Image (cartoon, rainbow, N blue to C red; front, side, top):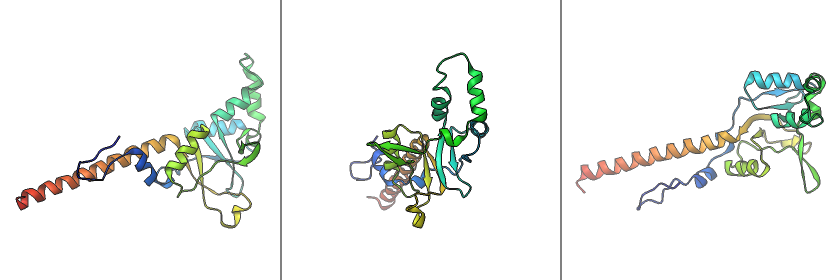
Length: 197
């Protein structure tokens, strides 16, 4: 969508707006974390009670170790059980299975194991959105820039970026820019009327 006037170069193209935004404008500080040593059942209860679709897996010092989503749970808990009617077996697994054994800890790229996909607060929102779309993920952990820990690949979690928040942030920014543009146009009209031109 593009909105603008004939005389103005100011337009509201969502793609261009997205390039002006940073992850910090869409990220949420409302995220859940669990320890790798917690059970899947505890993680599920945490997700359910917190009304979240994922939990971040962090160590005792608050460094990111992985992410656990409903997709991970479905793939792991039901892979050996398929559509069998023996659901008690999956419940038993959830009670004893540790988060560390099923959470996503990284991705494979060209046959190489890579770390977990993350972004920084100052990452362009367009880049984060493209990454999420390319990998088919709905949540992206936001981490603090590393300094000395960068070499160790330890990253401190500071927020979570939800794909839905990206779209919401774009809509909010388009609305804001339209409002500012409209106010400026009204001011110009008042000036013309006042000055008689």
